[in-house]
Image 1: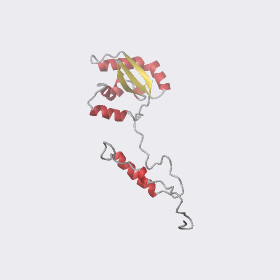
Image 2: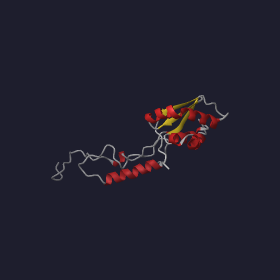
Image 3: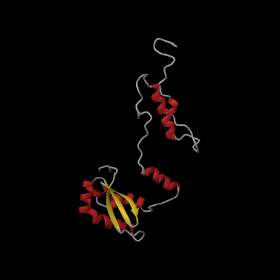
Image 4: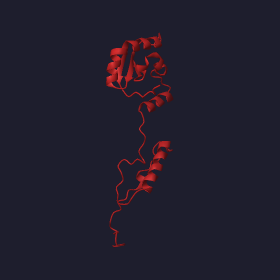
Length: 169
């Protein structure tokens, strides 16, 4: 059956359904989160701007979620569960710029504490090599002084990991 010169009744409708893009409460989650509401607003913006006949981007910026460091949700969960996996790392990180030389503090941050070993994250392999050669002993001494009798620091290990850039003064 022919309804108009441009469309046929038998033709399938290939327009995407916005409902498939919206976040809905499901299972034990009865309420939408702030991220879900943000996504739904983005879906509305996306479908308001659709041009018929042009495919939808597979990763449209309107519904893309912000990248989040994996450490942040884990730390939040540990705090909710009252688990303090490394009780002195937060204090050490806060005091770090005063414990080590400025040239070291700019490119490093205390990472994790595991069985007497402190892992210090360094911004790049080049910096790791430089810091290991010139400053590792200084770092070990500073960490041992800071930890005192509370924790026995057997070793300080350097690892390449992302280090937030510190503002230069």
